[in-house]
Length: 129
View (cartoon, rainbow, N blue to C red):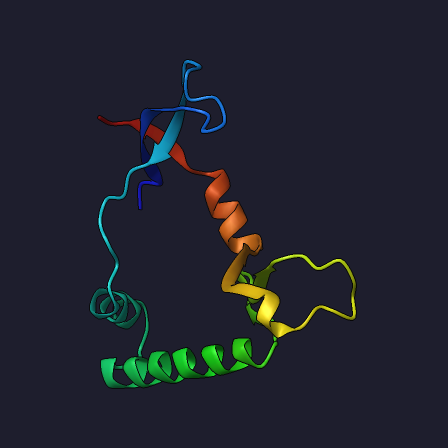
């Protein structure tokens, strides 16, 4: 693994001041997608577990993680990081007036762990168009 992260630079305008000149910011450019088939192959090549067992574990993990998150649990994936759910809502003038209909969105939050943080610290940046 070469730890080169491709990025490009694009102008972004402030939506509150569209007349104002924009500033330039970096954006990560993907090199591709690691799909499940390739993930299974890479795991199989690093150990002694066969593809059918890896598939079974990944499918079961997907179900269990989804179930745990939807039950309000934080899912810790070792030193890789953790997943939890977060909500957005509209505001109310009083606590008593608030109920679940004010919740507008649920989303998953991933917080990186030590292994991923250390990996990100070794990334080299390569500018691409």
